[in-house]
Image (cartoon, rainbow, N blue to C red):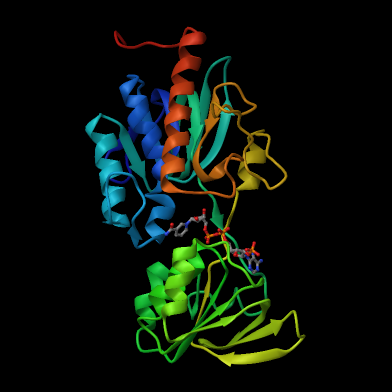
Length: 331
Ligand code: NAP
């Protein structure tokens, strides 16, 4: 049986040297390098681009100047595909299982089942939730986890709230301030982990109000968000702000259940433990990008791409050491 998911296809039961799980910068960079080592490689991914799809402009990827994130995603994908890598999207990988001394079975949605001697996990991280009353019920009705994706939908709104103090929140507040009358930036501390230039940009906007040392305790609404309840932790004062949208931009967390289910060791925060060569505790399984414990406080496109390249090299070395490397005269 041959599955057509996304544009290229993957055959059920097909064998690869390397299966890369995840098609963000780490996974696609790994794919580019794997192809240079002549590894037969497939990328299985939910979407192409990962968290790059949640960003508008990229200004810090070396050599490219200012580039739209979607264009950078296309460059990554086309680069990998130009070297013959099969990038299969629309697939959520559900299992990675050792089925022989040196073989893994990788299964995913849509009936995907492939085999490989090495697996590289570049699955990124998922969005953190606030966990306050009203949040779950109002998702899609004014509660959003992606300012960059949803800001235009709020064009003309009187006021919205953005929660968080990292790059995503500050970038979101800046963008939203062009679409709406007023932005409340709610952050639990009085200093920001966002890059200083982003903080300066938001401060220069005339319509962003900073609520520091403050936390959201409830999101209020029925058919749509109407207001947000905010507690100032320093003064104990609680107020209700009328808003039409709440953008929760409080970072990401690892897919800890998935990692545990395949026996991967994780750090205290739930990220996959890797050594300096991106090797996990399972021989033949490598990890890269936002899923790993290394550089946890500094997640960048360039660092994801770097760890992807290193992980692909390690997979190649592993195959040589185990006598499993079949290229260039593969059969
Ligand atoms: P982040 O850097 O982890 O920041 C998350 C923010 O949310 C922090 O300010 C944190 O507060 C706050 N927070 C976390 N849990 C919270 C909770 N339960 N309630 C209230 N506040 C909470 O996440 P991010 O901003 O999404 O950025 C993720 C990575 O992507 C970073 O490496 C960032 O540099 C990168 N990024 C870069 C750009 C860019 O360069 N243009 C754009 C977007 C993202 P504390 O500060 O108190 O911990």
